[in-house]
Amino acid sequence: MTYLLLTLIYISFVSLGLPDSLLGSAWPTMQTSLNVPLSYASYISMLMSVGTVISSLMSDRIIKKFGTGKVVAFSTALTALSLFGYSVSSSYPMLLILAVPNGLGAGAIDAALNNYVALNFSSRHMSWLHCMWGLGTVVGPYIMGYTLTHGSSWNGTYRTIALIQITLTVVLLLSLPIWKYHAKRVSESEGDTVPSRSLSLKEIFALPGAAQFIFTFFCYCALEITPIVWSGSYLVHTCGYSTEKAASLSGMFFMGITLGRAVGGFLTYKFSDKTMIRIGCTIIAIATVMLLLPLGKYVTLAGLLMIGLGCAPIYPSIMHSTPEYFGKENSSALIGVQMASAYTGFCLMPPVFGFIADKVGVSIFPVTVGCLLVLLFAMHERLLKQVKKANA
Image 1 (cartoon, rainbow, N blue to C red):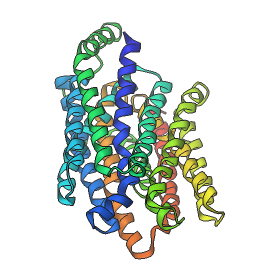
Image 2: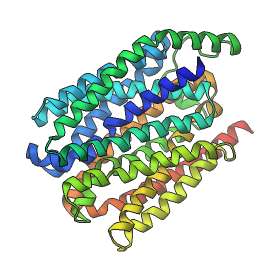
Image 3: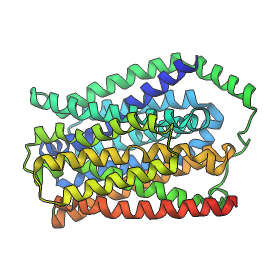
């Protein structure tokens, strides 16, 4: 029964990743059909992030009231409806409106499943969980590229993804007894370690190292969203690829993150969460140098792949270390606020980068990644010192 539940969780994360990569890969085409400036992709991404921040901050209370299974099923339905709205829309303002429920659903799924896996499964399963998200993000751009090169529009791809989400919603609703059975088994074997009330923001930030932990996640997600939203435009405007070709090649980042998380699951047998984060930062640093040097298109593609490889272990390692640093009883509250900080990074970074790109060009992309990497690494090291001091 446990493995069946894990399979459902993995499939849910594949489905979560499918729409995440569509905006970046489709935007060069969407920009033309909607007749809007390049930077307008930022506002869609920003509103999705606003919805996700709201649902993440509410996730601790909602999960305690309804349970993980029901939250995931309802939230998947919400994302399916918003994606179907994308598929029938040709209006930019309508895309902005639909971005909010899309973000609300995605944020609740993300927070609920991350907390569930962090509490109940090992680090390798957290890595493989996010590998499944990466698999979805790899498939998304290829579906987009295929539909565009075979005469369909970007709307058709969103319709396909919406139908997949609707199917998953039905499966999740049918699986609710499995979630209930597993929760009962965990409660019987380990006892109830979840507090009856939710922590306030003040109480969360009062925990030693919590502020550094949350800001580390903010920096990582600001770094990750940059290639997600802008790699397609970078390949078009800096490397000279066609919009159709760039839609597919933007999947190099997602291919790297998926491959890295598949391999990372095995590496967790040997390396701790903090070591995995340091390895990831080192790989991103090398990739950034590759993009900065004028070594040609193939090196640029390899650099995008390596940024994905470097990002691969960071997100799952941060998530999985939450109960270790702050206790199982505080895990749900911390992960909810982490997700809110993450999507604040997702919200703020695209418009900031879009504004800069409008002024100086998309070629600023590798410099932006490098600056965010420095902030991420510095804040993570400070976090480790705070945690060590608190536990001394």
